[in-house]
Structure formats: structure tokens, C-alpha cells
Length: 466
Image (cartoon, rainbow, N blue to C red; front, side, top):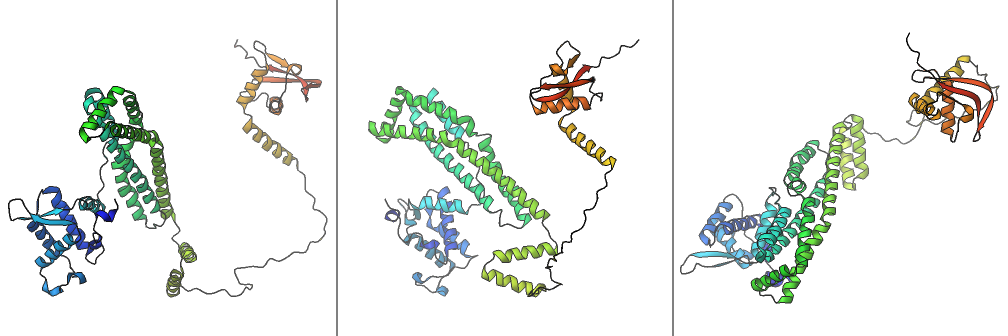
């Protein structure tokens, strides 16, 4: 069925009229009376409307066919009541066996009143334990109350749909907070959004989903319960009979609904992990972006130079009207001149070419200390990569266990790193932490293509105290 086959064509007209704010408040009064009164009396509704009209101006519209001065507050309130009846929001009738007039909201108007009430309510709703309620309902019905397992499945589906809606709403709410960061230049507003508004949403919705009503904790048990129910023909038959009794289904329709609901819940909890992970990522991105923007605004350049740079940036990215407004402000507040030519006093300095002249090269004096400095620098750089601990470990790996020395004929060099290490063994012998001596002999030895002098590397032995 199409919407306007059920709802009158002028149903929403009162919310587009010049008195829309008054009509909205009238609908909220009607919704409040609907919540607490079974039969809404016309007198009670009119009294509430008069209280609204005392503080606001109600303009008579053309379709009212009345003059402004001819209406009292009571007349205006009845005019609002008549408009609600004509546009299909309510019906007026008499209470059974009496002459008391009552108001009855139309069936389609009730959910619209609730929606408008929620849109106008800025307070943050607490998150309900939807995941735990789904798990506990299915678990209890399966183990203790099998005849009502069908009702538990319907409740689980309703909770799952609500959970899906809540998670997606939370995701887009975080994205809304992130979109507000970029254009905001007031640090106090950013602090309020981060530490007050966003923190309230995080504490009341995001935090319970991650802790008290953990999706990751219950999603596998819920899937396990539904898999057991689906494979148990006795339980399915019990649910089938219950559905046929409660909703007058035939067996085929009952089967279709039961399996459709089970598949919906299992599919959702099979994919909800990725949705929660995406929410976690957005939460982290918002926290990081908000803090970075706050830090940036706190450390921004507030000097004349910084403000001028900001003004030029706004001018470059602004529309034609914004540029004209900015130029007008600059002309009033600061002195700006136009640079029309370049000369010796301009910001630009022309480069001057120098003529190359052939001359004898200057002699660089060689000093003995230069070689020493280069050697010290090279050794310090090598020592950073080849520490005394590494050199000692290399020597210990060369000398066989139980031996105290090794000759170069028995040393195998396979890599450049080992060759460099052997050079350092010769250079740094006797240093603190390197208890060994190297004795050089005449001749050379070749080890896998590396030429090394003949030598003997011996560990130093500690002298016993006499």
C-alpha cells in the first residue's frame, strides 16, 4: 500500500504552514496526553493549547477564513483543533454512554507523533542490553520453556533489528562528529563537543556495547543456540505448532517465518564483528582528529603575519561575494598596496651572473692531524655497528671449545661482515672487555677469496694471585 493511500494528502500541511511551530507543540501535547490518558478529553487538550498560545503569536491563515481580531485564545485553540481534524491527525467523538467529547488519534498519526517527539528530544537515550537479552531469551526458552521458544525467537529477531539500527546509527553519529571538526575554528566549541557531547554518547552507547553488552562475547553463543534449534526437528515442530496456534498460520507459512527469522539473526551476528570493528576505527579516528585540531588551534600563529596568511587563504578559497566582503574589510582595517613593477627595492632581487676566470688551483695544506681525525671518525662509526660484545662473541665462535687459541689457517671467512670483524679483532685487541692477543707472522693466508695475514689469536688467561 502506498503512503498517501493511507494518509490524507494534506496530512503534513500543518508542519509546512506559517504556524508550524505552534502546530508542532500542539502535536507534542497530544502525544503527551496519549501516553498517560486512555481517553483524551477535548477540554483538557484545549486548555493546554491556550497555555501555548499565551506565549506565542498565532497568525490566521487564508484557508481559515477568519479575521485575526475576531478570535480569542479559546477561539484560536478550537481553530487548531479543527485543523488537526481536517488534516486527518485526530477524530472527535463522544465517550461511551456520555456527552463528554474526547479525541482519538488516527492509527497512522500515532507513530508520526512518536517520531516527531524523538526528533525534538535532544536528550541522549541509554543503550539497552540487546545482545544479552537476545542470548538469555533464547537460552532460557530452549532449556526451561520449550513451548514458548517461538515467542523467544520473535523477541530475538526484534532485538536484533533494534541492535542493527542502533549500531548503524552510532556509526553515522560518529561520522557526524567528524564532519564537524574540519570547519570548526573555535577551540572552546571543539572542547565542548569532544569532552561533553561526544563523551556522553561514548559513555552511554559505545562503552556498553564494548563492555557490558559485548557483541563479541555473545555472538558465537547466539549462533550456536540457533544452529542447535535449526537442527532439532522436535523443537522446530514445537515452534511450528505454536506459530500455527498464535497467528493462524498453515504449516508452510509457519516454517517459512521460523527459518527466515533464524537465518536473519545468524547472518547478522555472523557479520556484526566487522561492523563493530568499523565503529572502533571511526571512534579512534575521531579521537585522534579532534585532539590534533585542538592542538593545532592552540599552537596556531596569532601574530599579524599569521592572521594575514589566514586572511589570504580565506580569500583564495572564497566565493566572489566572500572575496568582495573580505577586500572591503581589509581596506577599512589595514593598508594594502599593489605591486605593479619590479625594481632594485622590490621583494624580488635579480640574480647577478659572475664571470668565470681561469686561475691556478689553490693548494690544500695537508696536516698530519687530518689523517688522525679521519681515522678516529671512521673507527667510531665502525664501533657503533660492531661493538665489543659482538667482537668478543665472534672470537669465542672461532676458538674451539676447550682450546685457548686459533691460527689463521683454521679461520673460515664466508661473508664481508666476518672479514670486517676479523680486521676489528686485530685493531681493537687489548681493549676493555676484549681479553685476547693477536700475534702476527710472516706471509698471507687465503680463506674463500679473502686474503688475511698469518696470525694467532689467543685468549688471555687470568693470573692467579700469589
